[in-house]
Every structure is written in structure tokens, then in C-alpha cells.
Length: 78
Image 1 (cartoon, helix red, strand yellow):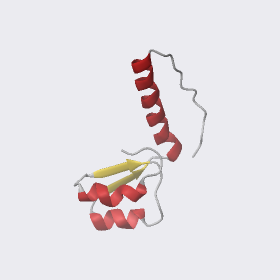
Image 2 (tube, rainbow, N blue to C red):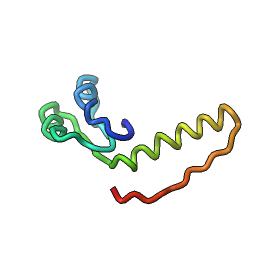
Image 3 (cartoon, one colour):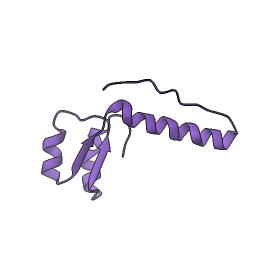
Image 4 (tube, one colour):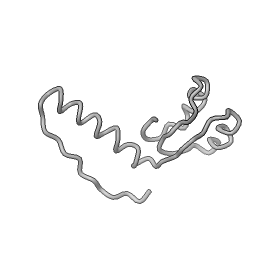
């Protein structure tokens, strides 16, 4: 899983024998490329996938430096 827009890494994932690449958004040829390479591709939404990375980073910073953090959810229909 790569947060945000990482369709450009589809060929790399296939070369490493991954079964699926989950990311935020596709590039135009992504579906055809995934079919040709025999790998599944999930475009789960740019905003939805980036939330995970930001929260994971905040948790690590909080753990390392003993700071409080809060994630403020802002609805994004995309």
C-alpha cells in the first residue's frame, strides 16, 4: 500500500511479485497495465489513503518525542 497517488509504482510491485497494489488514485493507463502484468490494482482515493500515512507519522512522532497529537477529520467526498 502506498498512500496518495502511486500508480507509477505498479510495474515495480509486479516485478516484486506482489499480488495487489493499493494506492490513492490511478493514472490513465493503470488498469490496462495491471491486466497486462497480472497484478490487482485498487484506487482507494487520494484523501482516504493519505489520512493513514499522516496519522501513522503523528503517532511515531508522539511516541518518540512525547507530544500530544490529534487528527482532525475533514470530509472529502473524493
